[in-house]
Image (cartoon, rainbow, N blue to C red):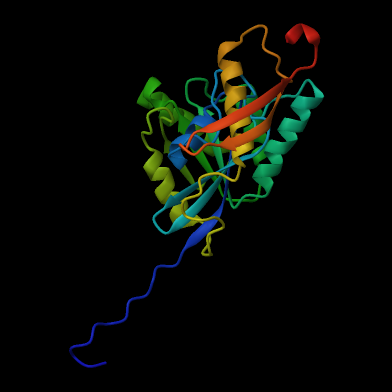
Length: 250
């Protein structure tokens, strides 16, 4: 190399991996995934057990591709559907590179959150604690909550965020981008979910049902996208069928 030649530059290594987000029902997991991804990939309602299956949201941050696994809320199951959802949630955690535990800071450690902490003692993957809704809780109470959780489980880091406003979320992305293993990306750079568009449309319809229906809500309903037709003007015609258990729910 002569004095006038520029030194060769080396491209930064890419990182990629799967991050499971677990927590009690309505802790804000789906809201947080949408915030971290920067787009709506998981439906959000105030009803418990909105997320039934594993939903993957894909975030590209710096030189890393972070594949978030939004799992169903973990709780004590009462029905076969409940048992299947809880089993799915723990399965998502088992297969991840990093496990994020989201705790609603307003509720603290009680009930389902307490049971999850107990079971996390058997998890071998690196674990991170995220306290959500911190804008509604006094700082002293947040510190006490963080200390209590870290006494029970060896978390690598603790973050305090508001999934609704996005406060603190960049810090989470920075940490994950640095912590995931070196490797090629799993998905194209512009892909934000592994859900087919037909399934994502069905999920959005289910979200609207949950938001509009209350005591008459059929929790075991299933939405199937029968037709997906893209029009020349860029719009899409979608035909869907909603399946319910009983005639009285129609």
